[in-house]
Length: 405
Image 1 (cartoon, rainbow, N blue to C red):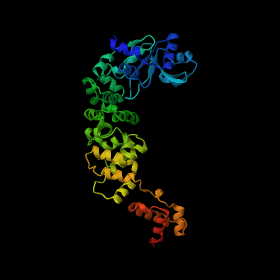
Image 2: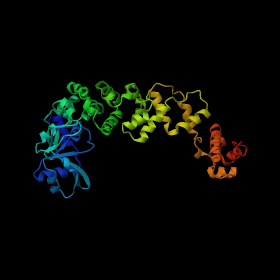
Image 3: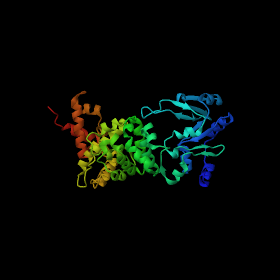
Image 4: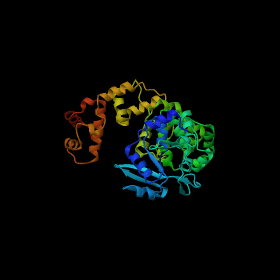
């Protein structure tokens, strides 16, 4: 039964015209068609859906016959993409999945004509609802509306069965609770720690996607506590055991900074993040933050600050101080660092007023190690006294430079 408030939300739902066109096309061809999953959940939360997935009683072949342009994107799993008005609309045949043999994927997929059979294979009740936007019919066989109203994450039927089927579902339960601000009901929560052996089989890339969404959520500290309490964190990121959720709460919602907070006491954060399939740049940047998490204090002179800036790079100033602040370290030097940075001092060899060719001309030499030594000497002098950074000033320095023997 649809509550009055939910009926109003469904009636007001803004469905993209291409999606409606596909639903109508399938209906006119004699098939059932429903919006399913996250889009229905978001409509009932009063939130605009990010994407729209369609489920239908039609087989992939029947969908292909019903529309002029269809792409067989995952036809072996019952999924095709209908191109309507230039928009790609994903359509999947109602499915019932056989036994999961590896905790990651079903041994086979069987097509169905029953929407409730399709919904019964889904993970959580709030994701196991279907809505026909033409007839305005809502199908909710497992109490998804009730759990939405109660802000509860509950598995469809048996939590143990759902988590044994697909180990990632345990992580998804924590991620949904974190992102939506919901509570995991007791039976579902208890099943997580009992199925960690299945979770450990999940592909790292899938865990990464869920963890990234959790880590960037406003309630990330709550999610991290849930991950630790259920044993999930120790199963995929034991190196974060010493991190406190409170420190993450004090960090901005920046992936690199929050990863650095989690791994601030880790000896090899870059290697850990690469193991977890984070991009190379994210891993390198987070490791750079960890290596420089103690910024200079308020009593440091400008030459030292310029050298610090040259070493850490200006773009890392904000993240470094954010990391230090989250960890409760001394950040009294930030105003001085910002003041020096505002002067736009030369911090790299590229910022020198003489380039390599000009340095060779001034020294009357060709390409040689001497040029690199001279360049390093000039940068060191300029870091001490930025006013020296002019063509005349640097030429004068080279004229009196004692060349290495």
